[in-house]
Amino acid sequence: MTVDLPAAGVPEHLAEVHARIRAAESRFGRAPGSVALLAVSKQQPVEKLRAAYAAGQRAFGENYLQDAIPKLDLLCDLAGIEWHFIGRIQGNKTRPIAERFAWVHSLCDLGHARRLAAQRPPALPPLRACVQVNLSGEATKGGLAPEAVGDFLAACAGLPGLAIVGLMTLPAPAEGEVAQRAPFAALRMLRDRLASPACPLPELSMGMSDDLEAAVAEGATIVRIGTAVFGPRG
Ligand SMILES: *Cc1c(COP(=O)(O)O)cnc(C)c1O
Image (tube, rainbow, N blue to C red; front, side, top):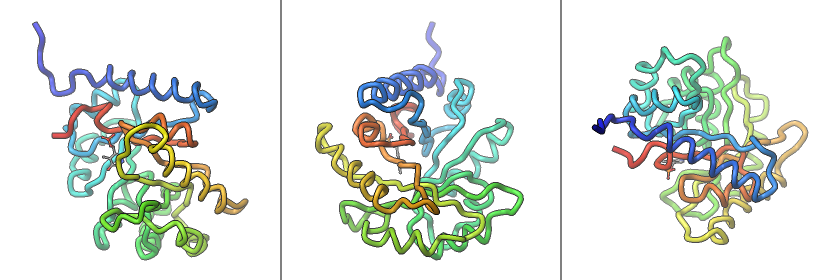
């Protein structure tokens, strides 16, 4: 008898994604364990997040604040769970991100940076942030133009409560590893150019279900994986 539980398959899919990451680390000469898995749980039911947590996953990424907050409430019993905000920051809705998330991957507005810094509760560690970079110039996508990132980092320096730890990108889907690697290489080179002792930018948040190998090849330290872990979004 098979029972169609909503979270069936999540532990197996998670194990498969870990195996893909390990294989890519080995193939591209990356240190074992140097690529972290962020499980992107947007539009997924909390049962699936619980199943992933039970299988050892701790970092979860959400895109939409209004969907995320009820999930954070429902899962507040899970010790050590870590929430990452990866979606577009809507208007001035920064307070729930500052108060309840550990990371934001989609920072690209100085007003948002200042608000997040001011709203971060002093009792919490600084909010870790990646600056989102729009490498393709697609007008519909969030992110700063590469030329604007240096000034943005300088303007964020010294904001209390906010630690800029790296760069993030979300390229248009591409076929084949060569085409997939190009924007990831561009993000890595931008990081190499902008990193300084005061702002070393160790993190590169890049790679999703269909292009994680290409991202690992180009230096990703965090891959953001949704469908390969949780299945199609509801
Ligand atoms: C949805 C999403 C992902 C995950 O995409 P999959 O293709 O489902 O792995 C990663 N990053 C961002 C910013 C997303 O919105």
